[in-house]
Amino acid sequence: MAITPTTIASTFLQQVGSVSKGAANVAGTVETQAELTRSAGTAKSVDAQREANRDQDKNGAEMTKLMSDATIANQQQSTMNAINSMQMDTTNKELSALAKNATGINY
Image 1: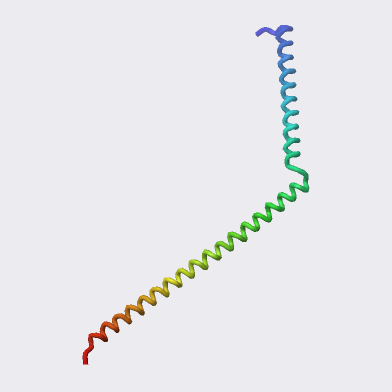
Image 2: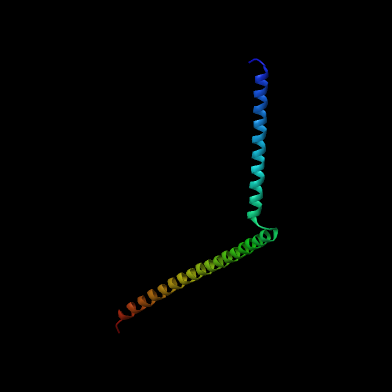
């Protein structure tokens, strides 16, 4: 392609257009960032939200601990009940066997 005043002017206009487009993009980005900052709230509101999040995290951890403790207690109680049931069953079988043997004894 030959370098002529027309091609130089065309290239120059393309570059000016690119710079203008870039400037418009930067301006749009700055406006977007400013809007995000406005929507996030003031430093006090952001701090309040962070504190609320910390409180919720702490409460969630406490509730998880309570639920875990209750689950452990329930498992222990169920195990104790099963052991007690087995012992009662063994005792009942022994008593039934004694009773059956006693009825078979004649004097």
